[in-house]
Length: 480
Image: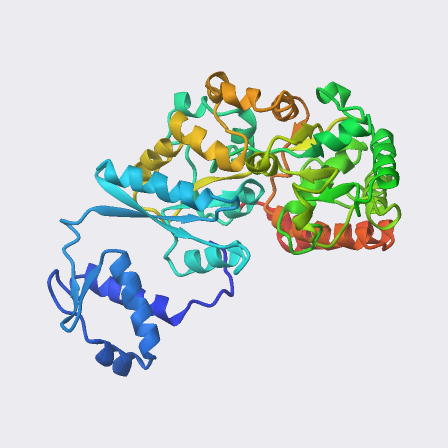
């Protein structure tokens, strides 16, 4: 990995020191390691630091702690291999799915087991947690990443590519956008376990009462002008505070992760705007071009000029009391628990259709010593049965075969096929550059400020300046 200033916690340093002594034979299987008090005295650290270090050693199988007796080195030659897995669940019920899947895998006696650690991106940014684990030499064997972050971690030499471990017949079972999203510089580092797109959810009863035209497919998608006229009609004819909920009512925040970019960038591309130049080394003249600026002005007007949508969190309105929502498909599948009054409409199209795709998936850590076992578990995750299970929580599956067997997916709603049509005909992959996390963060602030009413050209010029400076300072992310 490249140099970083990430500070390694004391308990990690102590844990690594003890691991080295175990692995070089200073402590043999069955030996007692120094007591907690002795470690506190010799290392000059607190009781809680020692306790945390020993808990980690025990969870990783290096020691066993016996109440009232001490901590003893285990015989790892006889113990079962345990792969560590970092997961960042994003959807309601997803942690339950992973816990069940891992339990089933472990109970099947595969010759090794998997232990999951669930991370919350809301409490501590996932990137910070991963940086800390990689720098300390304690990276997991397998980790989940959001698709657009793959290029950054691959560039940092933190990921091990799948190419040498997974056969072509297995990889050919995935939809092409999944493989595209997970690749960087010609190598495959990431396999998405779910797919996504952007859509409009609508209140069926309300739309019928107002005689609003409901597009039956992506070819019938509303134009931007028609979308505005429908928003105006809803605002005039209903007491709803906004015709359009943003992100199922969660609103817009510069700290809401990838949502701002995921929901905003498509409209730039729909207006024949662009994000970077072709070799991903420049944004000036692209992200702040007249076409891009005009698209962002159109979006900003929805908030502060027309008041058709909102910045604040009013998520209590969804799905019970709303007209439309710009949402992920997962919001639709979650809403089905409350009845069948929610439908799906394709994303409005500007001069051309453009919809985002890509979501979370699994990667192998460069630090793993067990790539074959990692891939054995990953294959298990991507069985048809498990993909059918996870699609209930996250929305769209990733295997080609799923569309042949998942009849219920198309019978739930006669508009659900819109999601698949968008993925096949109008989806784009977010820029595959290590600079994308920085770009996305800065775009989130620009979009938020534009929604609040600031000058669009000024914001987009500032965005281009920040991103291009970042690219310059990182030597345009040229591989060493």
